[in-house]
Length: 88
Image (tube, rainbow, N blue to C red; front, side, top):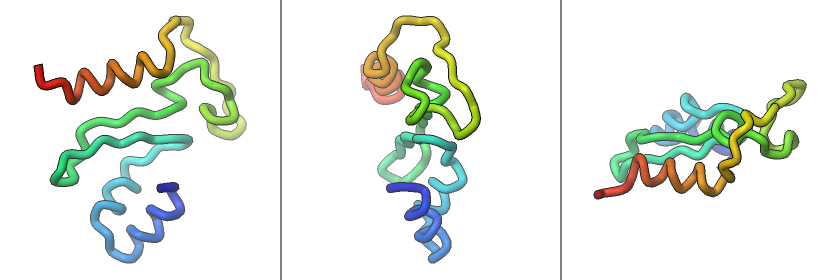
């Protein structure tokens, strides 16, 4: 869903949409919820994936610079999933 859809659903009383709207941060937010709808964790393309193309990773009028590490976005994503959802 995009934020416009969430805001419309939240305005109409959808509780899940209300929660997601309060947690959403530009530009792209991935939110991981429990089966009960509780926020477990989230990833943001600007904050959590440095070095991404500025058209998808940086807010308008804000320059984004890579942090200098060599971890790929997929590595960061998989590590995040393992940290929060690995049952070992």
